[in-house]
Image 1 (tube, rainbow, N blue to C red):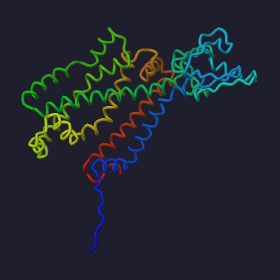
Image 2 (image 1 turned 90 degrees about the vertical axis):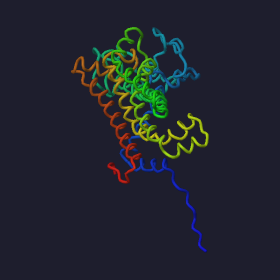
Image 3 (image 1 turned 60 degrees about the vertical axis):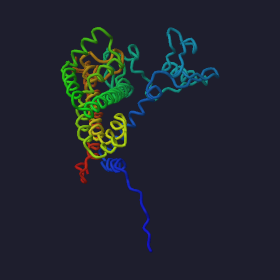
Image 4 (image 1 turned 120 degrees about the horizontal axis):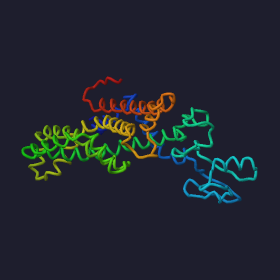
Length: 351
């Protein structure tokens, strides 16, 4: 008798992941974007005007993690030590002291007035790759820090909005009846509130901040996801596995989030990348209009606003617009790949 070796069946999730990896454009975009985002958390070590390590008179100092006054290194006329000038001084002295600066030794909120000749904004040079803005701050440094802020903002808002939208949509779709009817009327009334007017009113009373904008955006962004989840729950609760769970005595919460929700995740996952695009675009737009993050927070929209005020400074327009376009394009490719991976069709349009 011949026995065949039993092979483990591949789960649907693994099949979808394998299919997503086969979408080269979306998969590589995912790798690039995630790598850049993780790398952006090292900005204080890579893009900063504070030295990483200073050796002075036989002692070692770590300015990137601790404040040192200028008198520590016999500098006069400054509050905090000026490490770029200190680096030049040590090179000229040949005294055995040295400074290790970050790869790009400029801080996004640092004004370079007095170090660069002429009035700001300054055009791009080999030292300042994307020039400076109207306050003589390095544009490249502000762009990189702004990338981290934009992606973090979009991820947090999307996560909070999904939690609220999934919870409310699940309740409406599972219980139906009067719960659904009154819930839908409330959502329709809430959705009619103009988002921009609310931001203007709140900004006139409170100073906009990262977490304040996250709260406002999250309060408005959950509505759309509610409709998707509601429809999926209406479809799934009529299937036999739900009836089986009810007959076995499972409570409503377990049925909703243990049994139905995993089978209703397809529209949630496929819509997520496009929700990220919308949230990034909203933040850039609010910063451009002056209702976004408070100064001097690095912001793509604020740089665009400077460039629009005087189109002679082309680098203030091309830099943030190019960064926004590239970021949104990568996320769009990821969204297409995810959508195709969760599509039941065998063949993909992206192959």
